[in-house]
Length: 278
Image (cartoon, rainbow, N blue to C red; front, side, top):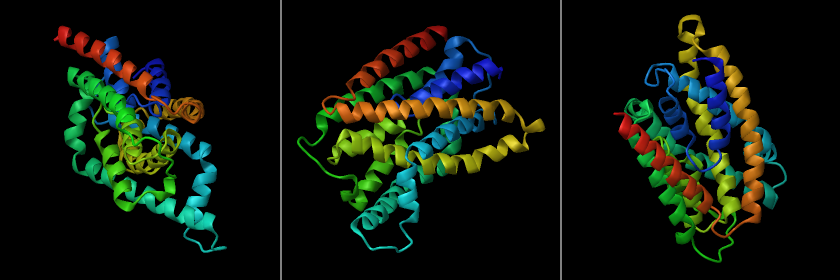
């Protein structure tokens, strides 16, 4: 893959990984829509995408470093304060919410890879993702002020199951988890916060599985380009995270509607173009 194509995918990845519009759909649809010659179902395309995701994971770690410092130090008894108990609770919720996507990803990896060819079905899934976002705001429990740490264990698993749906290109990881969070009564900012925390361990786990494939490739494959692209994705993702958290903090009513409209338009255009090219 030429460096400029990698750069385009990196910038798009950095934006769309946190925006609820499916970064994976954009990554697999852009090459065929733009006429790029790339082996998207080859052994090295998924590891390349995972490196881009690692860049976004690094951005999330930097943005939420205080949260992660509190969460990771929670198992070590200190003062026994309410804040310490809340951090320990959040650690449990993140662990529970990570389980469904980790299991589904390991079991169905090869079947999911078949969708990476960027076929019209991905555009259809993107349209469905818009429907999920549109309905999410309207199905949420009204006038709720639940804190993130009040989630029950089964609610964390349910939100984690929503995250697993986003392993299918076209469904947004952040979108599905946020809608699930809204459904159990979280506010937009809290739902986005939990969604971004859940992203980090699942991306790091994917990195442990996929990056060695780049290292085993002849001359390490596109590792150098992927590493630079990962940095670009990380910088873009940090800016996207800052903007999104501010957006959800200021807008509580119908906050997901603009992203739903985008998914309908982008998914519909991709579906039509790819169908007519067949």
